[in-house]
Length: 495
Image (tube, rainbow, N blue to C red):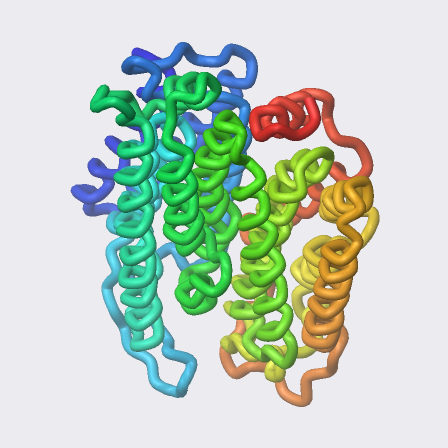
């Protein structure tokens, strides 16, 4: 069996099987086994790239392998966290955090099945080099992940799930229209042309493509896929979905799903570059990126819901990724590296937020104090995560954000550089207060319901993630450097 086919079908088949399992422990065991097998296949792909499949529709280039590796790595540790966080039972006490509670039977088999289908659809996006299949993959991620957002089954999670479905569906319709524009752009002379990226880039480099329709297609792609990526002003679903989901799901939504949606945009940017019209795409990415950072900075200031704060932080970092690709040069390298760093740091923070929520029974930063005292490991990760997510040394996010800044300075984009630094500073100021009050503040009274200790499997995943971000700030492995340079080269950056 082709390796690419195995990467997509393995979690898909396991997910379908999970729906028919009656035992919670069996569904969890299947999910963990599938996660390990998928990650093992991805590691093997680093050693031996799989051959393209189905006339080049499916292949694993450097960009795809980079984002797929992040998604598979996060999924593996999300399954470990799920088992260790103490909320993996088939009968779970649900709270709406407004004083009332009910007991609702949310089958573990449904949760595990949706999670594995979610992994399969994200894999499909990463391995697809045909624009129609990229669209199918992005839409499939919405359908697979929507039930996970509704997991807590209270009114806010229902609202978040519907908002996610409706807004992302509008975005995906716009992206579909972009595919139609792209088909018109390459149907010059009435000739049929495949929507496979390599074929389109060859035609574009030879001038056999209508630039007007191609530019229109890119505009629709950046709005359509940008909706799923969380670029402002299309980001409005993201804070609700990320904050209302279980923490393991929030980590995947922020650390993996947003990257997959970004991949749809940069595939279109590759085509623009080949056609010699890349400047339009870069300008649009800078505009949307800076605007996203500004919107995130505004909403982070005064935000008391710490999970929503992390969600708005994701909007900020998606803006940083867009700006990096838009600037070009070394900033593209910085953007690809930042995608890795942000995913690891944000997953660690969402895992830790889940531990804090389990203990304090509140998502309000005003009601959480003394995390370092009562949850020492989670408290250390929480403080370290603040410095990592705000781009402070010695974490990898500092190096990747600095690389993007260097790209701006190298190209004399001083105004953009000033705006970029100012918005980073505003976000730092907005997050420092809530984070440190939660970590160091004193509690007058402990929560009525609380755990007596931190289960080891609940803090191993965030500790591993945070150590990885720290290592990437001190010494980036040669294999990862080579892959990121190749990915940046495919986008016209450093080679």
